[in-house]
Image 1 (cartoon, rainbow, N blue to C red):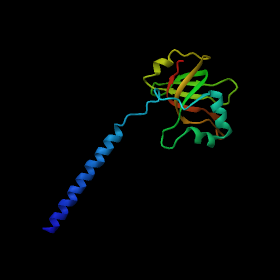
Image 2: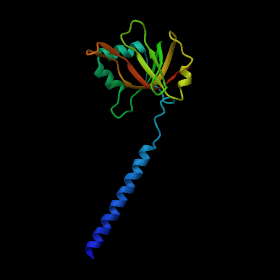
Image 3: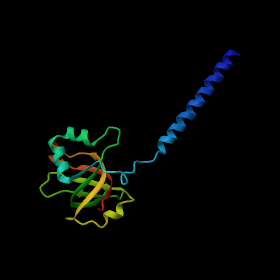
Length: 158
């Protein structure tokens, strides 16, 4: 009798644990994503300023702009369109880079904001808002400069 009672309590506890874990997982999966476009920008910079800041001291710039929990800073970057391309998902990627800079700012648009990037032309001066994912760096193996990367980007109209 006592053994049946222990097994019954164990099964009830296991089922309750599975239901709670499932509810937490479902909640986390369906959490709303961060709305970068309606958020206030944390910093407004030019493409040259942020590239110079990263190339001068990457760890200080990472401390200032990036967060380990994925809640990195929202930036407004002003610069000259150097290149417009598409990624493998069909999203527009705009490179802001001035002629004298070693690297630039690569901004990836979302499916919702792709249409705004269609009107851009190389040489045009614009401001793009997005969340930073990585900073500029020099790769000594490839002997190339890596660009600052912005995601969830859109064009800022003032």
